[in-house]
Every structure is written in C-alpha cells, then in structure tokens.
Image (cartoon, rainbow, N blue to C red; front, side, top):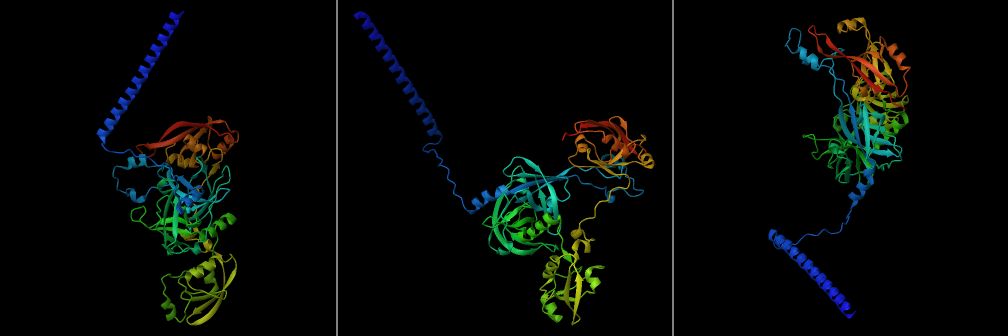
Length: 524
C-alpha cells in the first residue's frame, strides 16, 4: 500500500514538472517572438515612437451649431424633361444645295410628322428649403420651370419624393413646390433681410454639383445689387461659395435665420469665383404668400417705362428735385388712357412724393388690381393731376416674355385627346397625311406627345408613333381608342401594334416598321 502511494506521488510530481516545463517554454517563445518583431520594427524606423489617437472631442462653434440645425431643412432637387427640339432651318441645305447627306439627316434626325428630332431626356439639379411642415418648399424657378418630373431628397430621409409646382414668379425667379411627407418636416426660421449689413456673416447651404448638404461661409459683400434689367431683383452679394446646384438654397445669417435665396453667381469659369447673389428673403416671403393664396403673383402697373440711368442733376435741370421722368408709355395701357405723355415727370402718388423709379414701381406693384391712384405730374413746368387705374402687370405687358412668360404652345389642329390611362396625346390621321408619309395601312392614330413617367412612356411608345391596333382591335380614329379604353381596368394587360419610322425610302418617304409594345395597367 505504501509502495502504491509512493508511485502515485511520483506520477503527480512528474506531471507537475512537465506542465512547468511547457509553461516556461511557451513564455520564452512569446518573448523571443515579440523581440523579433520589435527588432524588425526598429530596423524599419529606428527610434520612432508609435502615434496614439486621443479620445474624440467635438469642439463646436456657431457654424457647427447652425449646420446641424439647418441641414434637415435643406433639400436636394432633381428635375428632368424631354426638350421638344425643332430642326434648325439654318442647318438644312437650301433649295438646289443637295449635299448628298439628306438621307442620313432623315435617318438620324428626321421625323415623319414635322421633321423634329426626338430629343433625349435631360436632367438638372438644385436646392430648396422647407418653409412649412406640410411639405412646402421654396426654390428658384429656373430649377423647376417646364420640368416633366421633379424629385426631392431630404437630408434625413433616404426616400425620394415626387414634387409638384404650386406656383412660380418669373420676375424674381422663385417657385413654390410641394411634397407629401410621411411626417411633419422641420421648416427654416425666416429672418428679415432689411436688417443685414455689409460685413455680416453669411452661410450658404445646398447641393453644389449634386453634393448634398454642403455648407460654406463668408460675409455679406454688398446689398441692393441690380444684375441685368430685372425690376424686382435687388440682390444680396456674398463671398460664401455658391456653385451650380446651390440655386434655390438658403443664405443664412449667423443666427441661422434665412436672409436670402441663393440664385446666381458672377463667374468666368462656370463655377465659384468669389461672387454670389441671393434674393432677399423679404421679397421671397411676399412672393411665397401670394402663391399659396392665389397660385400666382399679382403686381400692379400703369404701363410706363423709365431710364434707371437718369441722374439727379437731370431732374434739377428740369426744375424739380425728385420724381421719375416717363420714358415710354405703353400703347393702350392705363397711363396712356389717362393722358400721360413721354417726358412727363411723376412727382407723387396719392399725395406722397416719389423718390425714384424703384419707389414708383414698388408702390404701384403693391397696389390692388383695379384700384385708382392719383398722380401729380410736371409737364413742361406745369403741374397736372391724373387719375390712373392700376391693372395687372402681366396683362399690361403681355407681349413681354420676361414678364408674362412665353406664350403657351398651341396643340396641333385636329382631334387631339389626352388618354388618362395611357398618358399620351393622339390625333386622327387624314388620308392626305397617310399618302404623303407613305403609310399603306389605312388605319391608325398618331401620337403627338407622351407624358413623363406614364404607362405609355414605360412601355416604349414615342412621339410620332402610329398606333394601328390595341389588343388586336383595329384603330381608325380617336373614338376607337376611347371605346377600347373604357373597357380596360387596372391590372389588365394591353398590347399596342405600332408603326414607327426608321430611315427613308428612295422616294424620301419614311420607311415604316411594325411591332408590338405591351404592358399591364397599374393597379390602384
């Protein structure tokens, strides 16, 4: 028994010695390996001390606070459109100038209905800022004008929202658009631009070159800048970096209040050159309030023009110390009907002296349409009084695109009908048209336009296509399309047989190809 115990003790001792030996070996191996790495590191950079990162500390300042506060209220706007380009006559060979390239022109650029080339969709981007929790956004009109689709991306939301235009004002280049958010949005705080001074801090936020939520800082360089001939645009000038894509974004004071709408830059390179311009927020607020109330901006006018370059000494030479010298009198306008003449000097309106032309225009513009104002006028040294009815500025100057806008494009004559379920406009073809275009098929209607983001666009129908059947039913007129459409429901499959011109025949008539396009009407 004693022998057995002794053998057990020897085994335990041997195991302990083995375990100790292994532990010492592992420790020595670790030390040798570490030393080897250290030696190699010392060879690569002898005497170098590893760098250590400190704990993160957010320093913060007024610009940091301002950026965090305002970034959720600034949006990125992307808009696209398909331009309707007409072939330029100056690019076409004249009579007798056949250069041999006409077949190629017709193949690559021609259209069987009007010879207008089919243009590719174009896209542009800008900025805007939220002014109402319900999704109303203020931006520049040139960002969204005549766009087919407008998409808005919020800084705090990965979703993209479709926007619609509520109203716009060409003379200030402002527009109000709206999205339908899932929850209330954080609006900006509107300041008062009358209080800003040259030298004040100015901060711009927007999406220059599509880079969302970019923040730049500078100062107010000047106020009341007049760029070009726009009457209601007296800009705030700033050296805060403004680039393409900043248009429509806010210009802020150091408190984070909006003092302007970034609108344009002065540049010789197409990018920031140190001079940017923002429309004062006071004017923007006036425009916004008109748009949300009436859908448009209304301004009064009496139908005169004046020279902004007239100097004070000119008035003194004419025997007065204030007023506006009438330049042109709009034919048929309120001033002409009241008896005003060129070279009359308007001295006062409703008993209050007129300081200059801007003062006159602003007071008339703010007057109610249809109201009657009294004007005291100097004519050849003689004082005269006139009663003039204030009319809508866009009506008085309806022949000026910069004020009234471009005239609406007229729809082609014929039976043109908007197809709600398909998203296109069509018209019936005459027999003479079919003959001139080489259409042997005596059926079909021609597509005059395709709505953006519509069913017709989705399945590939294009302007100037000729639709000859729908779901194997022959189409001879617009009424046939109405009849078939009335039987279709959301979720139904629809197949169009289409004729499309590709190139020309030897007799220069279009070469027509026939094929099917199809799709399923969206379910509600």
